[in-house]
Image 1 (cartoon, rainbow, N blue to C red):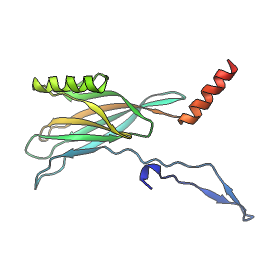
Image 2 (image 1 turned 135 degrees about the horizontal axis):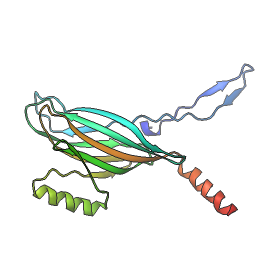
Image 3 (image 1 turned 30 degrees about the horizontal axis):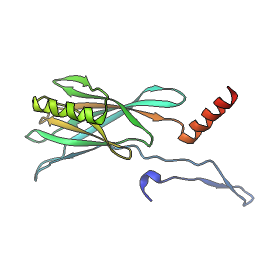
Image 4 (image 1 turned 120 degrees about the vertical axis):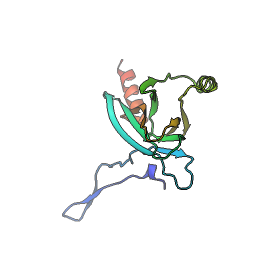
Length: 179
């Protein structure tokens, strides 16, 4: 059993000794971003600080923003692939990368178009950024350069459904039935 499918169930017993089940308490681990970088012998890994904030919320969805700060404590420029696991059912809707002290927003587009744009910018020796879906609920972005002792920022916005798909389908069917 993997950690994503772990569910904590609380069962209470009454004073009479009869078991009674209570609603399921689902415990979801908080997503933890990881930076995969080429760290040489004697070097320190790049520090990652994250904060998560709610940007917008309604009855059905919650839009959140991850603010991520990278600090390279080594004496050379480094690069890394940031892997960001998101909650189940979430999808990325925004991305910004700090370039020359300014947050530059990305554009959401199809994977093939994004890859072509990324490669074109890279050929111009411009600092491109791309967020791509890897597998399951994991997203990845390449961060370069991460200069020595100069914090670098990235922001990833994502949307999480507050209701599971079964509830949404049921509610949709009920609305159609009564319209």
